[in-house]
Length: 514
Image (tube, rainbow, N blue to C red; front, side, top):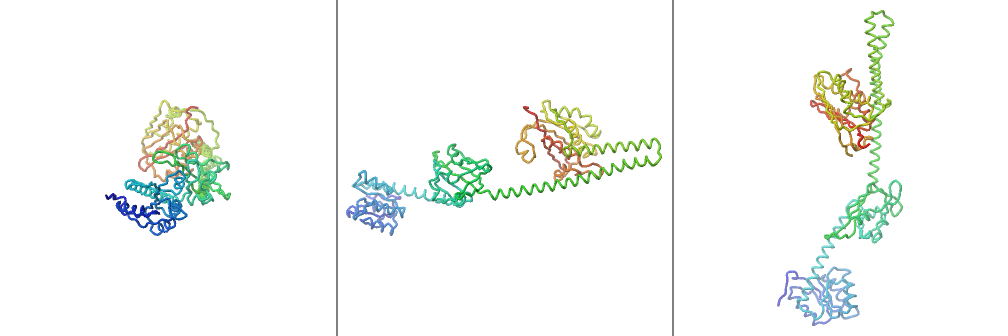
């Protein structure tokens, strides 16, 4: 009867059996299964030589052999060099023999006397197990090669946090070889410390094992190498589980961020230097603008006073010149007031106030400032939150924004002032000095004027920067508004496009829950 199966066809087999009749019987039975017997030997030494020469795909090994060494010793020696599966053939199944046989890592046992069906089943199961183990070894090789080639340090642990794998980057960062680290607790291989205090920090592997989820440390930490040097790293860990959800261990990935930190520090220094340069440029524009405006004002005052002192004049002429002197003095005082506000040296008294109520009270004044050609619309809800601000500065803020809108609409238009409650997230205030996320009152001032190019929007809050014709503005109005709002820990946004008008959005911290 032929029992050949496609799974066994052509399998090259080494038979190690000291009884020649049994060996020949095995050869015949293997042939009926479609298998090929490469050689029959009867000693451990011959088995080792034949295995090395033929590289069989299967070894059927009797435990009792001729000579001083048995099949267990031969299988152990062969398995140390080759991955060929070994199936033991034995009539002796005593406890001590089986214990010794297990140490050789056999793939199966067939007891003598055996029948052909049992032999075939044992062979098929052994070959199937060997194939699965081969796939596993290949997967492990790919896994190890992948982890060894990436730029991050990677350490794998068992469920107790002991190191089972470490790639070359991890070895370089910790200062330990993979062989030395294997089996050691991960917190001894990569001891971590707080960057600021140097206090020991728990390795995230243990938190990942305890929580069953991925863990990333909130801030960079110091890794103390085996040689005592410290390396600034960031790291994360995650548990390793099988298809059934059983935890097998954990893996931690980490990288040296010293170079990134140096780059960040260099960028920060450059940004600080740039801010200082910009401050100097602003101071230069401020000084030039103040000198120009005050020279013009002083020319009116001094010229009029000198004329009155040296030349006789009619009462009407005298009154006119005194009026010029007074008006110019008022303008000079207003410019000084704006400078004090801009520099934040003006004395202010912030109080709790309702912005909507204040805007409603200022509506007639703002309407007069806007002029008859501009329709002023004020929209405010009844439940508007309160803010802490100086009423005088709030009035100046609204007047400056109104005047700016009026000047953008010389032929008339529509000016809308709308207030609302809003929540501001972390992303909105990330780049705003002293501003915090939370509840804000928003004041939206929108005009239908000429608008301006986006690149100009970045400059409009700079002192003495103006898009108006010479003599039409000092360039301090929006800079003053910016100073007022930031002094209250708020911020301003602006949107504008040529021909589409301009919208200013003032955000003031609300007193919700205070």
